[in-house]
Length: 413
Image (cartoon, rainbow, N blue to C red):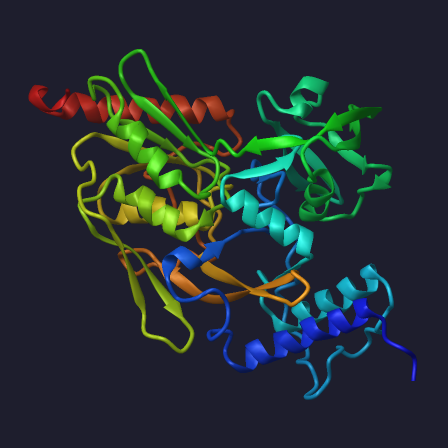
């Protein structure tokens, strides 16, 4: 019998863990039943235009195919047709094939480094170079460069296509794998090779601790506060509440921009919705084999100021929880294009070596009972998805101002 390496044994352990979890309906493992323990990192082989993942990979490695397939034979640790290869690529292939056969389109595997990076990102910081990445065919494209980051100082631009990290070609790699390669200890160097309009360029970057800056707020000349949420990482709800409460004069209403927001922590989505609701339901979580769990807004939200939520095809998962709850509770007008349509919740199963497998454990519904999976949210005021982003924002601001104009003068601030 050939001797199995540690890597192959680790892969076999992951497959065995998967089998155990699914025998138990995937409901007994994970991180618990509380909303604060659930996270919803979306991701898909083909992302909608404009949908991005921050460099530390709020999105996970590309999920397995959703198509049905044969189940894993009882007692087998390795699916038929997949050999136990003594190398990391072979280990990952074994796990990827197993995930594919489970039929869970959002199931995915993280190496220890990838999962640590994801946890750091969800906590609002990471050590890297400040890039936002998205999958473009077989390539990984840079879709954003964080202001003040090492990448910005070096001259990296949105639209550049990553070709290598530290000399390793990145074609056909997942966003998470490229993100993990770019991360590392602060003050360490990393080489980045890109193609810009077909021209190869190389950058020598030095990693640094980078805050996620997932909430930004600005005030228009006529008093509309524009709050942009890039992802629902730790503390986002608190930052949104501060932005709403701290605006001067409370004159012009609120524009909540959730475009290209891939989701994140479900409890932060609930906290964000609570900023604009008087309490009551935000969503219902349905876990396999358990009674439905209502997720409730906290008391004391702003229920009077005009509110518009701006969405697009990249608004997904936890971001749809916020938009859907505000829509169903008649609290906001939705402007933009149809959202992505992801109504499932995933939880991680941590393995002994620090790697993790993330599995779908349930679904959420909006307060009216809608399951958004595959359908998304249609806006009240539609803006063609092919129009420039600035046009959608102008339309949303027009709607906010119109709502403000209908208020009695005493309620305008």
